[in-house]
Amino acid sequence: MPTGQTAFFHQFLRRPRQVAALAPSSPSLGEMMARQLPAQASRVAELGPGTGVFTRCMIDCGIAERDLVLFEINPLFAGDLAARFPQARLHRLPAQELARVEAAPFDAVLSGLPLLSMSADEQAAILGSAFSRLGPDGVFIQFTYGPKSPLRSRVTKGLGLSFTRTRRVWANLPPATVYVFRRPRVRAAAQ
Ligand SMILES: C[S@@+](CC[C@H](N)C(=O)[O-])C[C@H]1O[C@@H](n2cnc3c(N)ncnc32)[C@H](O)[C@@H]1O
Image (cartoon, rainbow, N blue to C red; front, top):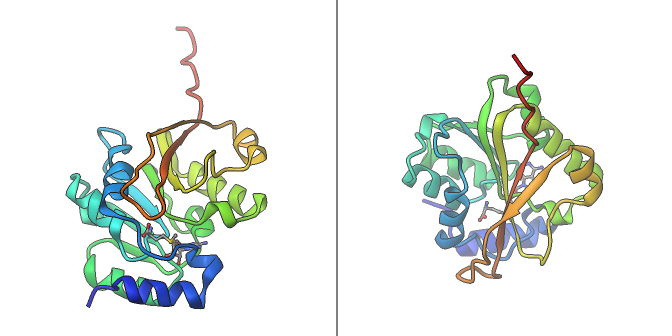
């Protein structure tokens, strides 16, 4: 049976810092996240999928289930994801391990991680690992409930990232904004 709102809240009570939300994200936020995927995206990693709201939206947006790679450390959520998305590759590992266990490049990394409650070192480990496996046009997509970027400026500057953000999604509790982080494009050498 899919993990419901009550089970999610129970997991929040057990692991407040790790789950960091009282309820799963809404499908409206999921749609906004999925809409930020590059037009030709096929291979996508999802960090902290929880109950799979964003996973479902990405599949509905045309990403093949077999091209999804999920990183989820909560055992209850991971068990549920394995049952609901059997073709996706599931790692019951911290997102920081992405570069160690996945070699081929991704078109996007979409994150539901509670980055705001992480230290700069934790953020740098996750973003560094993700960008080392993103192609040159790859993007890191992250939502936040806060009024500004969820990444500490030391991390943004250290990795040389730029970002854009969407309008606020009010149909989510609490309302959230989606950030898209990119690396600057390296200019092709003059021929
Ligand atoms: C705020 S919940 C978001 C869940 C889901 N994406 C959503 O929006 O409803 C954060 C999720 O990240 C997972 N998580 C936290 N730290 C993690 C880490 N280092 N690696 C992988 N998953 C992590 C939690 O177990 C939880 O499922």
